[in-house]
Length: 360
Image 1 (spheres, one colour):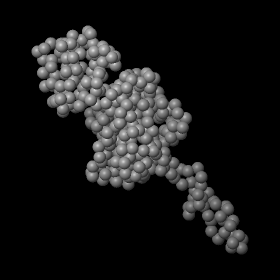
Image 2 (spheres, one colour):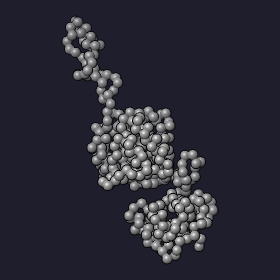
Image 3 (cartoon, rainbow, N blue to C red):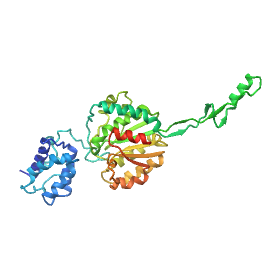
Image 4 (cartoon, one colour):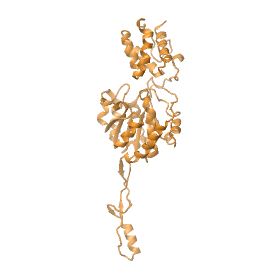
């Protein structure tokens, strides 16, 4: 048995044991082995854990399968493995693509971890619907406001409405009976929601999209975009009245869900569109992401700095920040935290409702 056959058998064993190992994770695993060849079985185990598991529950399934394939058998010979994406014996063929085929792009829009498939959204539970009702009720009061530039008639105001006073006086034979006033009313600021739908956010992005549906339904001016390896405008799909109907409409729109992560390039793509800039200017910008950027963090820092300058307020919600011990020490978050007005922990609708109740 060749090294690649041994590794593919190991991946099939994980799937047979019940551990979901999508194509993106398989490619991460193979790429890591070619870039950093393991020194021994222990080193191979650490690489596999980092690329193929995401939780303690995954480890309970993973460790016995790894022990079966590698403990006592030694390290497979990896020198003849192909690079991920090649068509030789090391390429990821049909046998390793149970979750959908990966299509390589032109190299200008995405890395090799790009996926192109329909997202799957579970039905909204009764408890989630109750939380959405509360969110739609609480969101308007939590949104920041701005004074309108135009004045309107009011009982009390800061400027005399000379035209109305003159009209009333003309009707009263030239006597000024009462003063009339004008004032500048308040209105909601625009809201821009940017949702990370990459693989690392798979457990949270569905609830984040449900929250975005509540924002679109209850706020006067709201726009929503998703990003994984590309930027997608999803506001039209979220205007459906029922949340499950809206999520169903997203299945044909959000094609990069559960794939790779390109936060910086996606945000720069947003800022590179003149129409999109108007959505961010003076708005409450809400980014829902764990901030785990893949690759160079310079585009991420550049994009977040500019967003912070354009926006009235830039708020970052991360599921990792739900842990009281969390500190933004990863490369991406450590670089952008200085430009974020507020960092909070949100992993589901319940924690989102708590943040809304505390004020945006």
